Image (cartoon, rainbow, N blue to C red; front, side):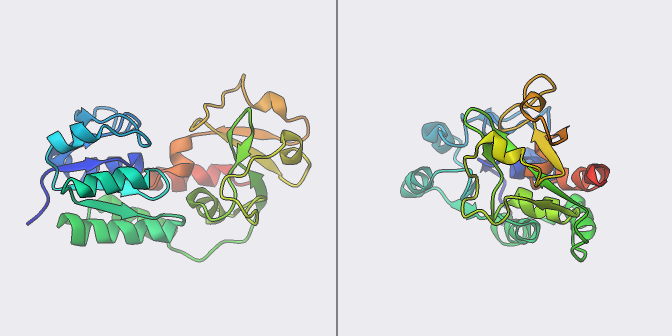
Length: 237
């Protein structure tokens, strides 16, 4: 039978589920900000979910992600008899494969129209690299997008190569001078997880041009992928 009580601990997927069948979504984290009018029980954050509140919601399934959620919380929910589906998403194709499994096998829902539209936009051949970029995600200490990340793969599919794509760490700590050393043609400053603004971020770079971007459009995998494709084209030189 189709799942009719779902708790999502993954903001990207929360948006995707709400766009598909909002009435079945009964719980989400405080970080699940889209859609803006989402009216469900809030179960705290992705890293510190209120497990009692989740149990009280009696969900058919809880949705989690290997990067965003803690293994110990998944284990405690499962020990309490709650079904938890965990995905691992480091590329755009992995995101589509995860949604196929989620809708077809886990939820028993019809695949939503946004999924087909997004797949059509993002499933072509890799374009040539037109610019090299760096993507800080935190300041003091500075951290950037490294290797094996969804964000890096998404940007590459727009023709933008991450200068830290070969770093051994997924989100390495770096010196800002290293980011500003001339390897990157552009530094992208998203508004999440760190909220870079016109007054906080660009000031750190003397050599490399910067551009403020929506964190949702470069880090989320869900209906935002449709908008991300069109907005991403504007990043191209």
